[in-house]
Length: 280
Image (cartoon, rainbow, N blue to C red; front, side, top):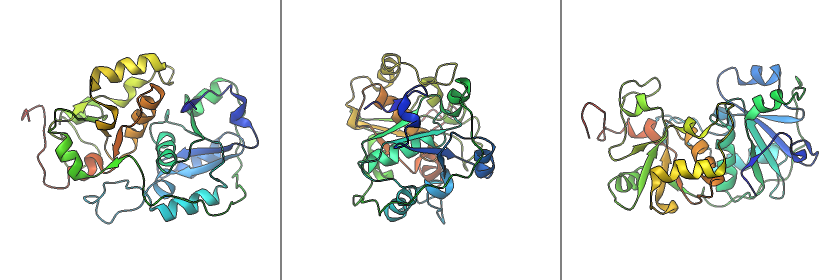
């Protein structure tokens, strides 16, 4: 199954599909009520797709929720292991849609797709939005594995960034990677040895993913001959990195791993930091 689905695909609005609208930010609920796809469930990045760390130095700003909590959330949404789930957000899968896709895939849920182009693709197609506060029927407790798959911790990132047969990809914008600015975390710069590939390079001017062939070329230019399972992707806090992981899946590159803590964890741990100025 492709990780992407088009708004014109009838499965998006099939009554059997679990449709989930992912929003981020303090006004997420208000924006959802201002217009969402009919029968779309609201999911919020901070409440549903992340836990709330006491110290971002341990796990970053958006650590994954416990598997127990995630299972309870899926059950509240009516999701079962057999459900076909379609997710979207209002940020071209960059702030939540891809994160939920990745979380579901990480626990072994096979039938999940992201709406290519997100909410804008729907409005461009003339879909009439809803303003109701949709509440689905709950399902039984979702069975989950003992851990999220395809993640790495900070120790593995330290080793991978120094290895010739592995690559760590930082998908933040270039100015943050180079250490020119840092709007969210405490220190500017990047993990020494990490390479930069801005996540939005995977999008067309219309806000949709590039074709699978174009994405394969884009990512191969960065990955080279390194095996996909030796690729680690990170961002600021493990959210936009999922956008790139989804793009890689669409390009046929399966097996890369997510460093959830990302720069928000690394930059708080008194570890080496590279910038354009220091040349590390």
